[in-house]
Image (cartoon, rainbow, N blue to C red; front, side, top):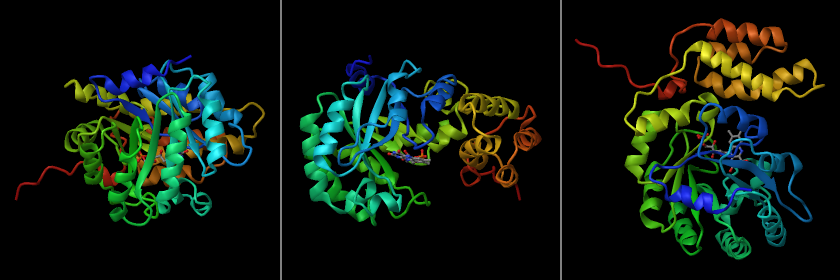
Amino acid sequence: MTPPETFSHLLQAAAPPLALAPMQDVTTLPFMRVIARYGGPDVYWTEYFRVHGDSRPEKWILDSITQNPTGRPVVAQLIGNDIPALVRNAKLLQQYPVAAIDFNLGCPAPIVYRKCAGGGLLREPQKIDTILGALRDAVTIPFTVKTRIGFESPAEFDALLALFARHPIDLLTIHARTVTQMYRPGVRYDLIALAARELKCPVFLNGNVHSAAQAQQLLAETGVRGLMIGRGAIRNPWLFTQIRAQLAGAPVSPPTGRAVLAYLHELWENEITPGVCESAQVQRMKKFTNFIGDGLSPQYLHAIRRVSTTADFWRVCEQFLDHEQALLLVPEESHPAPPPTKA
Ligand SMILES: Cc1cc2nc3c(=O)[nH]c(=O)nc-3n(C[C@H](O)[C@H](O)[C@H](O)COP(=O)(O)O)c2cc1C
């Protein structure tokens, strides 16, 4: 059982805590197992437990708590707007070895926000106020919130900050985009810096963290306590280790093509479900290669999206990755600018 104190200690540690972001259908038990082998984050988040009416915590998400293979704390995330159901599920979940209960205020999927859950709640500050009050009263272990900066406009953020400041939450993670912005460019790290200055509780920065150098710069610029990383960690499972090296002033070693190939093999072995047909297995791997390909090349992405057999999957991966060159594993738009050429 992970004592809840672990999480409080983590928040007070000298080094900035690094968290793996919750990602539905990605941050499951097998992925946790794989990423832990690469050094892994200091703390994991479950994907959200959907809470409504008489719902009970989903078994497959509970597995990532009860069988947590990482030796590091895991935080259980809830999404919903039914207050008695949220309170009931939070009380149930805190009996498991979880480090904290987290409430989702950011999911941008229309099917979720139209029901006024996840990011949709950002349009109803009064309701958020009541939910946070009820959950804070019910949760006896650390209670945390993950939010976006507004529903439609960053101008909503000031009022949200005032709302969060009213509740004694233990951590606020901010994905610095609005809900309607989805994943488009224009991440407002300046608003995260504002939150880090104004709130009493620790703040984690989330959104588009791709590299160790950028992570170090964002920590310095915003003054946040820690970082939460999602897609960057799927693309580059070495990222947490690289950030720790960068912060310690040690060299950051980029992986080679063959090391990325070995990572894909490890994912394959861990994500295999016995009895599942070949095309479904390949489809499952595309969930990961869609993100990994972003950090490789458009040509890889184009080719891997079109495969449907195991043989073709590995043929394409080997074509692009069977080499010893170092790879940055960051999306093309985030590549460091080339040095200026002499006139
Ligand atoms: C496939 C996928 C699933 C996600 N599922 C969740 C989730 O269950 N709960 C949540 O709070 N955020 C979820 N997110 C959002 C991420 O936690 C994170 O806020 C977002 O990806 C931005 O961080 P990044 O740029 O480091 O990926 C999901 C994101 C992705 C890409």
